[in-house]
Amino acid sequence: MSGNKPFGVEALPRGVDVPGAPAGCRDRLVERARLQWHPADGGDPALLAQEFLAAHGIARQDLARPGTHDPTGVCGAALYLSAAAGALIAGGAPGAPSPVPALPDLVVVVYGHAPRPPARPDRPGGGGWWLGDWRDSWTPREHADAVVAVRAAIGRGDVYQVNLVGHAAAPYAGDPLPALARLAALPGARYGGTLSGLGWAVGCASPETLVALEHGRLVTRPIKGTRPATPAGRRELLASAKERAEHVMIVDLERNDLARVARTGSVRVDELFAVRRWCDLWQAESTVSAAPADGLGLAELLRAVCPGGSVTGAPKLAALDRIAALEPVGRGAGMGALGWVGPDRLDLGLTIRTAAADAERLHLWAGGGITWGSDPAAEVAEAAAKAAPVRALLAAG
Image (tube, rainbow, N blue to C red; front, side, top):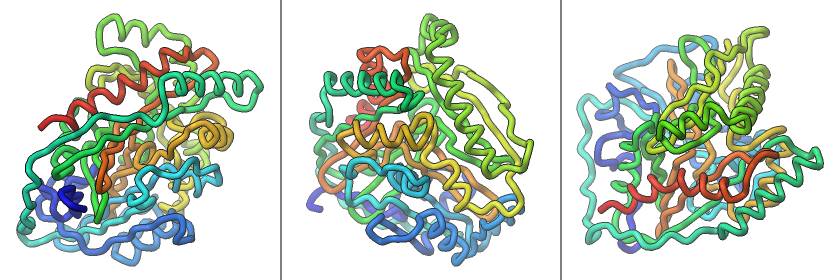
């Protein structure tokens, strides 16, 4: 890998930095076991994840009956699932090939507690950090044409909404992990953190909860609707009929996703269209929750919620077909799931505002939901606005 060094998770500069990991444990966690999976390996990634966790002391076959945290034994596990793997378990089209083939589509890393913070391996110097120019996988014109194609599909009644995502890559030299770790400092990065392995690394600054287990309830927090973080932008977002319709459509989709695995009658919308800030953008977020059905296992939950509705569209399988037909590059680390699963804890973020490194390049994904009311030029500008803070922080020396 020459001078480019995506190191393993055990070598992160500030201890284990996986989104959702217990804050009080991070500095003394050590890796105990790891599963990495690609589609060519065969099998069901959701079931493989559940079985691997159970084999290493994290039994999540019944989420309604959580275990307890052992401060001396197994703490929990990082879990990463790509958007392509999510489409596979949902029975949908997986999309174009990933531009980061070294990155697995499923990663599960089990951690135990060390009696004291473990010594971190030395990180050889790479002569500083350099990031080259970003090269987009489609031009603004091609992106706009894809928006027009989605609007035509909506007009035909094929879909109601489709989330279109673009990709960009830039060459780099040096160690990418410090740059990726900086993403956690972006304002609103609820799932800020990193995960890495041999030849790959992922950095996340996501504000969005794909699914968590909080106080005995499953929770998802879809984000849809974006404006500049100015007083006028906030007023525009609250007043926009187009943004509210787009948002409510995804809230309804995610209500249905949770209802498939919830106790009958327990699904509710706890908060609708709350405006919150991520970097220099306002975004609309809702909270949907449900009580897990008895006997609900992690694998079944992942099948119900992956890939996240806010990054697919509605209906989900029809939207995945449009995505596969229109996006020229796979979503790689973007639009998947990354977080923590422990005996007593489940907290997975949706990997928006996420970058990945391979041996030669950094990769970034950004997009937005397309409805009948979408303006192609505005959608192109929105995707660029979402990517801009991530690009700027990755370029920092």
